[in-house]
Amino acid sequence: MESKVGDNDEFIESIVCKVQDFKSGHDEEMKEVTLGGDGKCLLVRHRNGEFTAMGHKCTHYGAPLIKGVLSNNRVRCPWHGACFNTQTGDIEDFPGLDSLHLFLVTVQDDDVIVRAKKRHLIKNKRNDLLEKSCMTSANVEPEDHNVVIIGGGPSSLTCAETLRKEGFTGRVILVSKERHPPYDRPKLSKALDVSPSSAYLRPGQDYYEKIGIELRNDVEVLEVDVVAKSVKMSKSIPGTASKQLKYDDLVIATGGEPRTLEPIPGWNLKNVFVLRTPDDANAIAEASKDKKVVIVGSSFIGMEVASFLGAKKIPASIAVVCGKKSAVPFQSSLGKLVGHVIQQIHEEKAGVKFHPLVGVAGLFSGDDGDTGYVREVELSDGTRIEAEVVVVGIGVIPATSFLRGSEIRMNERGFIPVDGRMQTKIPHVYAVGDITLFPFSWRDGELVNVQHWQMAHTHGRIAAMDIAESLRRTKRPYHAAISTNHSGRPIKSVPFFWTVQFGSSIRYTGYGAGFNDVIISGSLDERKFAAYYFKNDVVVAVATIMADPLAAQIAEKILSGVVITRNDIPVRLPEEN
Image (tube, rainbow, N blue to C red; front, side, top):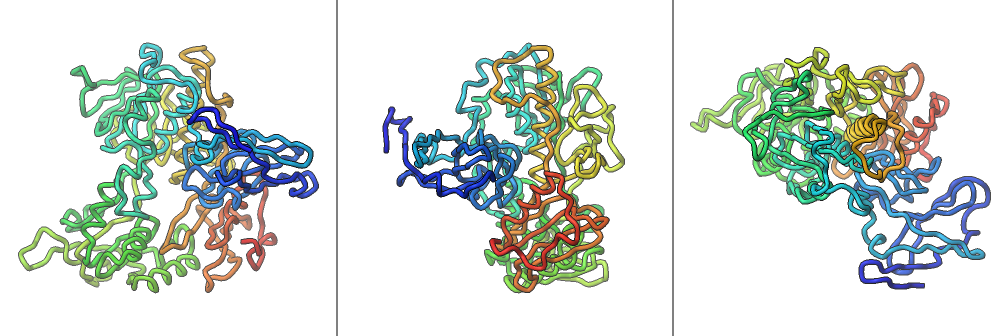
């Protein structure tokens, strides 16, 4: 069945299945169904017997949600853990920014019928800021309230968009020293040759103007004055000579800065790189062609760079300096057993040479007159290895040094403690993302630092919800909100991250800091397994390879408060994985 209502609103209506195709009982169940030849949707039968239908692919990277986990009226993506409400299509946990289109479902006798706009079947994502009436630059009310967001990452963007979804009509100013608008940072180390624009989280300046967000790129915030409620910028405000920007609420979302090898001799030689921006990524890919590459650091950035370069056969050789405390890559986060498997993959696929339990003592240029370029790396044990390109991936430090003269409290490492609403001790000042120490639900409120892409999104939304709720109590400055959740309460979110090593995806969920034991389910030799991380005989995290959707299942269990012990760990992986 099919009907048309104008070129942009063509509807597709089709019998997609029979009621009896679903199992009898009161459990939730989902099926991926086809509407004629025009597209697919995810059909969900709820515990009360009612049906809903929505887009069938995750709005983050397009994973098929039918392979995910259905639980308590939401479906969790099997790849990266994003969650969608199966009654509304709304995104409830990240990564990703967009919700899913919801389609009309009717039941006639035993027939389940779905009606959907054809363009919504083609384009799976739903951005409520564009789909529905909302703020634009033309109808912002500048005198009402100013929210200034410092930083250009996912927490900044999620915060800004959430404010608009919640009906906020004042100014939202996003100030970032990046020259690019917010982009998909995890993609950089996995695809060094990515074009900057293809990594943008939103299409560019026009998008931000459409939703009434002032985007000021290539502008650094130098100081924050919490008494005057202003920030000092490196460039003047357009149309004025002033570099002072007033705020009513301030959100600090500056993320991290890559650690360098300073003060090690030679750390500033040419062809020594850190990776933070699309420009860094492109420069590394270009400089590495047919060169001897040494990667310093054996965790996520370093190993993903090695994987990309090795898989593309770009350099002449790759060596990895693991670090003084690491016998294998990923040792601190994934443990020796999993780290050894990843090392084997790199050795087999690209002949990567690993240098365990050593650091870097110095970098040296050659004696051939080309003294500006790195030519050797001296390790802490005195060994020297040839190097024409050095990539440093040894973690990040919080980008908060500009706050040292302010009254905003930080610890000795530069992290900012916040409460469950992402508020600092200073009224109307919030901090979100990698720079924070926040009370973690799964550790009884312990202040933790979780530097995951997904968690940064969550922080941005929590801060925006709190600002919105605080202002809503004063009944200004607002129009009708798109969102229906006005609680302003912290959103429980289970950490979920991933890495790709020569095509093998490793998924990790939970919070494994301080784990003291690991149990393997499945086979390390076959590289199809789950590693369960224990602390005090309770599972605190799991990492999987070729075991989808197990990581998503564990995330749902953690979210539901299920305690997993040693007795719950199977020797073999479930067959469906």
